[in-house]
Amino acid sequence: MLKSVLMSFLIAVVLGGCPLAFSYRAFPQGLSAGADNLLTLEELSGSERDYVLVNFDTEKGSFTIRVYPEIAPLSSENFLRLVEEGFYDGIAVHRVVRDFVMQAGEVPSGGEKEKLIKEFADEVNHVRHAPGTVAFAKLYDTDKKEYVANSASAQFFINLGDNDRLNENFTVFGYVNWGMETVNKIEVGDRIIRAFIVSFL
Image (cartoon, rainbow, N blue to C red):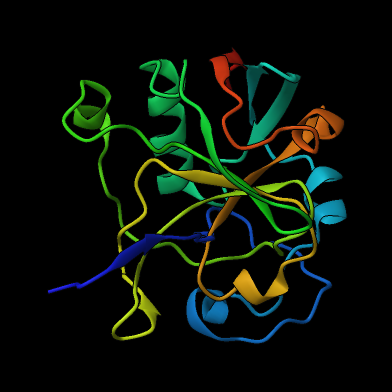
């Protein structure tokens, strides 16, 4: 049984259809072991892969996220479901570490929103944790000093720096394509006013 559990982060990707083209050689460990190389943000943003655009309005301004179901289907499906169900509306950002991450998705225990939280299986990671990329957090077992498999659920984070050390444990499913200056202004306690899907596949 876990004595203490911390929420942290995960990035993963499942290959679908045509093989992905990679140019960044990364350590083939953990969740990234299923990828020969990892996509850079430039490669992801410059690709012709389909994406779903999600808008976040916060107390500090707005930003949008491109979500890529092709590279991380389970993470994308879970994120879009939570957005559609209004899970992120009104909640506060609970973690900001400058040059590392901004994290949101923590809700009070026993509330209505807690009923919307569902854990899902880990996915292979195919994208570098570059500034602006988005992934789901995972539980961390402080006794075993390892992330808990298949524990990603509702908390997501946006990378604020180059975090390649997260590549093997967390699954990138999208990136902030507009409004990163807003993300960098957000502080702990700032609220997400609403999140909504702008465009579907």
